[in-house]
Image 1 (tube, one colour):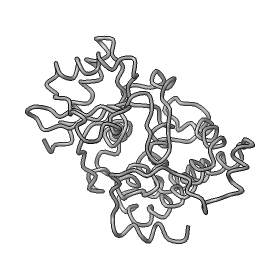
Image 2 (cartoon, rainbow, N blue to C red; image 1 turned 45 degrees about the horizontal axis):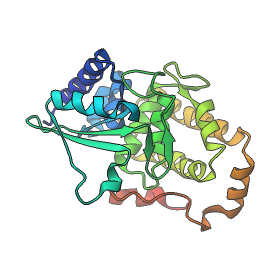
Image 3 (spheres, rainbow, N blue to C red; image 1 turned 60 degrees about the vertical axis):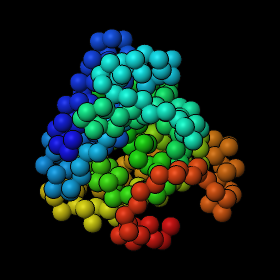
Image 4 (cartoon, rainbow, N blue to C red; image 1 turned 45 degrees about the vertical axis):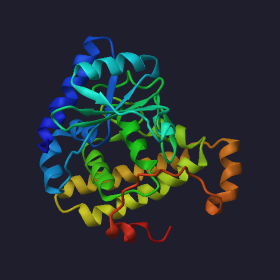
Length: 265
């Protein structure tokens, strides 16, 4: 299945049918970015940003119900044969006929940095909240071109503010990062990479979009920097990046020409 609309339709249908059965599924990843910025579908296409799978966040307390639901929908669970640790808070499914791959993360996204969703899934639907979409991307140490494209479109489509109603909640993001210097540092680097990425991938955007993206990056950065930091944050900041500040993730994808975006940090 290669048609982006097929992924969107399947993702939305799964969320709706799961909800009707009392099962909470919320989209994240590239499909969520596409759904949350429908007016930028043409730019997604112009930027050659195809959809390749569907990612969900769900509650671990509904683990059995989620598997039963997806099996009924034609998905087969992948068994943890050699790497059971990979499946501790994650379930993987492949559809028997349409070729769609699904990842379901339970309660948290634990990759380069950990993001908890235990009290966040009722904020928005069918996707996670915009602030969580931002954190999902900015926690990635080796940010790739697909991530940068997703973030540029999200920033073009949505303002930064202090609430979650169709707004990137910079106050929430700053609060999370003010307690975790490592996550803060990765995010700081990534916001700079996204800004540089506008020079590389910004051709499809009009002048107003570019202005909005720049101003929203400025505001989000300002909110993060001005948020009061905890004592633990300050202690870890004194050590800095000479000690590793992130967790390794095995399946990191990276474009060769992003080396320039990573330089100087």
